[in-house]
Length: 122
Image 1 (tube, rainbow, N blue to C red):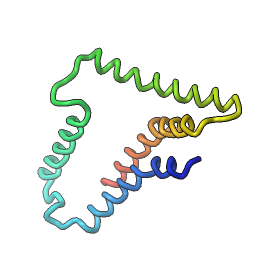
Image 2: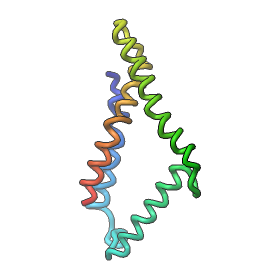
Image 3: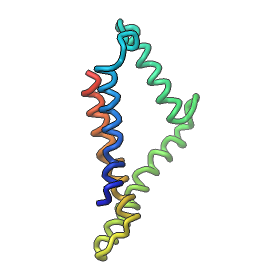
Image 4: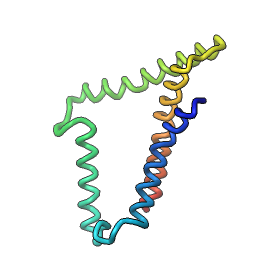
């Protein structure tokens, strides 16, 4: 596997670890929430930021959300299927291998990252 692909797959985990280390040891006390209410306000700001990144202010139509959610598995099946066909033929192109590794991270690494981030915040 290409070293750049490995680094790309591990980069989000390293970034979360770096953020945790900065918050744990380097952040001044004025940045850390002092009360539970401040903690809730901070989490609400993070939630609002996440919603803004996910698609804007208002809710989308249900069919738009359904189509968007159904496109993800279809793309994954296409990429992994292409990789399987090329692997069965005996030669996988580097571009397809990199895309398959990205899709694998989408399937498995994202959940792992959320699990690790959840454990780090406790």
